Image 1 (cartoon, rainbow, N blue to C red):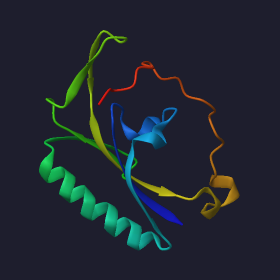
Image 2: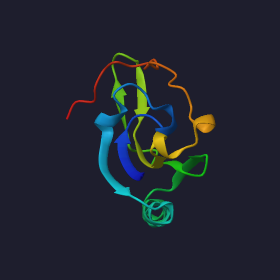
Image 3: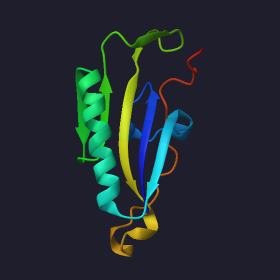
Amino acid sequence: MYKVVRMYGDFEPWWFLDSWEEHIISSKEYEKYEEALQDYQRQWVYLSERFPMKKSKDGVMTAFWTPEDRYWCDECDEYLQNYHSLILLEAKENLPTGLQRKSPGKRPRSCKMKKKA
């Protein structure tokens, strides 16, 4: 099983910070990798045409942004950038046992303040 996930939040997708799932704006599941990759690539093109800045990791995680899309965080005492993120995830059970990563546990988040609507 594969998933193509879009998120919007103040962190890049590869951090998988606590509560990262709360920032998901869309998610679609696929049985075949080729179908998931095709959807990921289609959405990647769409986002890259709308947002001038982008950074990728591992070829299947990309953050897109505009420098103007940020907000002031009183707790952090700085501006935080918002990112439109795209990820292609593979279900852990699809991987051979030797390739499955162990859970790193909880990851710290530098700012506990939630963006207010």
